[in-house]
Amino acid sequence: ETGVTQSPTHLIKTRGQQVTLRCSSQSGHNTVSWYQQALGQGPQFIFQYYREEENGRGNFPPRFSGLQFPNYSSELNVNALELDDSALYLCASSFRLATDTQYFGPGTRLTVL
Amino acid sequence: AQRVTQPEKLLSVFKGAPVELKCNYSYSGSPELFWYVQYSRQRLQLLLRHISRESIKGFTADLNKGETSFHLKKPFAQEEDSAMYYCALSERDDKIIFGKGTRLHILP
Image (tube, rainbow over all chains, first blue to last red; front, top):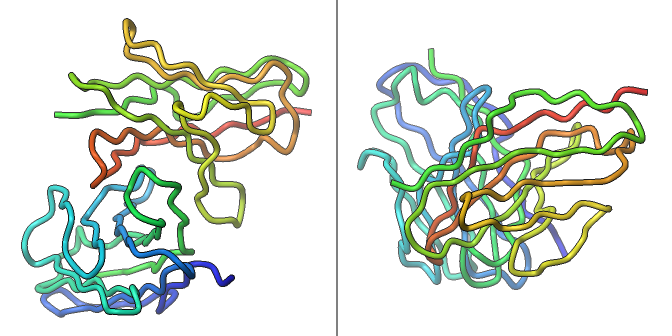
């Protein structure tokens, strides 16, 4: 059984650019949730995908979008990057729903200059 | 709006002393509540959830709906308990709201 993996580990972008972050869910899990964690803060829910459909969204603008693929891996896309988008981005997979135990990945550290 | 408040950013406790990490929430319905923990250089992981009513690594948490609290307790702190602890709430099956976290530091 493999755990949740995320890529890349870290990256640096400039304002206005676009970025794609990737997440492979744990074997057997069909739900992926994405979180943004700013320095000194708790994770903030961005959205969740269940069987390739968006199944809930937090207070993030539409320039944050996502996809889930048939193998339940997922992407987070952020357009028109802003300085405040600098954060650790976490994904978590669960068997079915957000209230099932979530298994977190190591995160992707995004720095926007 | 739902909210999770952890009033202490840092809590220092001597080894062997009792630990209580506070968590208060605001939500009008029947939430599900969780404690997640992140040890140094490890991933965020679930510690316990209120519906399980179980003790994990000696920690327990009781949901008090009257006081809207879900404090995490352990009678005797151990050095390996040093970590970042997050209280979290879910109102439905589609999102979880985390508090800002409390860093627990166990003093030798």
